[in-house]
Image (cartoon, rainbow, N blue to C red; front, side, top):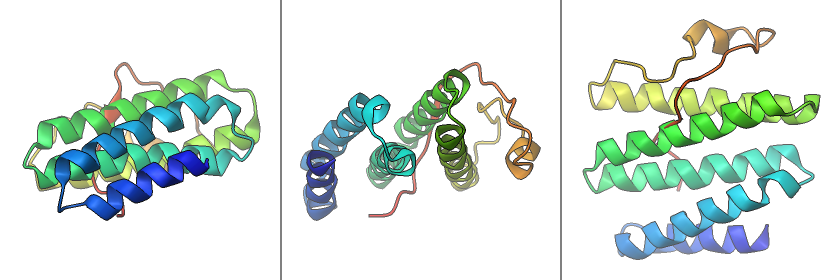
Length: 150
């Protein structure tokens, strides 16, 4: 976790002065968070690390006027979380992932509105996110977005 924090902090420190270095830091943080995701005991921390890593990278792409790359990051995050949501039997992990899915979907809606994208490639209807008891949504493609806090 400390290595991930150092990478995110470095990316944030270099943003926006050195976008290339920030991008490398965020990419490395994303890879580190993905690698450690299965092994973290704190579910909320594990999901937060993924969400921050992907959304910071998406935000950077928007800043660089590359909204399509940002959208792919959001889509990838959404797909990654959905896949793990469907595969886990732990209720605590499911709850943490669900919160990450809601945050990711919200980020996607903001991105879609900002860049006039309304084809909603996230196959999960918005009412699924409003009803926390219904967690049966599946997705056919991966999704990701921008708008993470720096």
